[in-house]
Image (cartoon, rainbow, N blue to C red):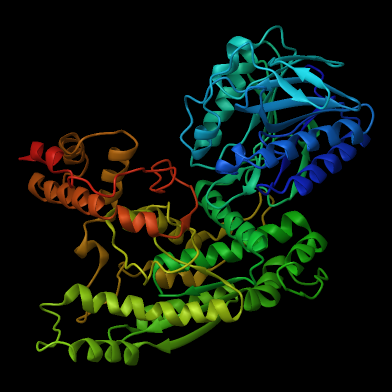
Length: 615
């Protein structure tokens, strides 16, 4: 076995544009690593500025500030340690590059740059699209640097690899660093692990991967993965989705077992919500609790985030962070378990839920909303919007000779109920400085099965990139097994989630008690399958129909054709809703995020040309 003790990785939860705090975290971790005998410490990509700076990467003051931070590291790093840090640099021609510098006390050893972004699908591409050339030079202080992805250090030649486009620029490296800014996505960590192992075989040297942590700038949640591989084997691997603000990873950390998929998804959402609360200085969250699957999962994710945070951070750091958002929590004395402490001492102040019944609401959803809220310790309330709906209807009827009826005005009468719920919960959020959560999921987002300025009202849509069929499975898992916080047995329990699971999903907006989502749309498993075949596999409607006909044999081809037509027609006219919707967390690869996921024209042909092939 090789010597892995001289190097380590650092993962940091950065804030875009906050150069001083980001750089302080780098210096603090460098001091800690040096005391532990680490001689080479690798930080993630763009850790000085943050990854999600967007067009600010072109701003001269940000670029100057990044260089100043690099020089600060050069002069203030402790003796005997080299650190690798990511930052944007402008060359002598003013073109901006995604760079990585190796620096030690008194010296910048070299600058590497990403040579290609051919696999990228995010907004960063527009800022780092200039092709690298051998003439590229950077002025840092009084020195000039070219680009070299193989850098000589006191520990040997260190290679820097952003992606496969850099492979041809590596020569005789003795350690490969992969500085990442990789967002969480289902199954992506396993694929990256395979890549790291393969590189350790190809380059015949240890490979060190490090990634950013947490929800940095709104949508992407960086998964915190750190890993050491050598000779095709994993030597050490961190946990995913760390709640720590900064953390040191070495070979001594060993291999941390991964949590099961559903627990990992909720952990990602919980981490995203925790960071949103901290970075917006919100006094917790407000949520319109319908008694359905989506709001129940959102509420559970809030509670999971608090329990995971206190478990990983420890009470003192957790309490310090919450104090920034106006919380003053009693000290955890260890006499009760962590779950009880969070539910009894934190959640009543942190999460406010409201069940807003209408004339068509039933007791089943009301009891489910109250039950889940009680299990989680939320501050729960109930009120009726029936009078508000009647007043809105009367006002509109007064302006018309024909009063509204369900037979003629079904959509309008449904939507006014959803919209009447928004002002009250917004008032709660505004009064107590809470972040309003909206509950739209990916399946509803795809077909526009949501009411603008109604159930879409809010600042963040935490499950907006999770398909409804997966939401239902996660909730069943929560009800039966609880959610794992770590691999040592700590869990979050919410048994009253079963009250949600036994219901058929319904918007509960039409009288009669017979309305269900799947009657309005189609079976969610079919909707979600169409969604994946279209966005992940790029199949046209005819190919999708042929595929699902083989998979869903209980349905006739004619029924399945109707589902395909309905999906694409609704997808094409709903883009304006996706562009107006609250920020979602990237979870599934079939991301509908209008900014850097599913980019689609607002005005389009409604897929008419492609749907012709179904006739």
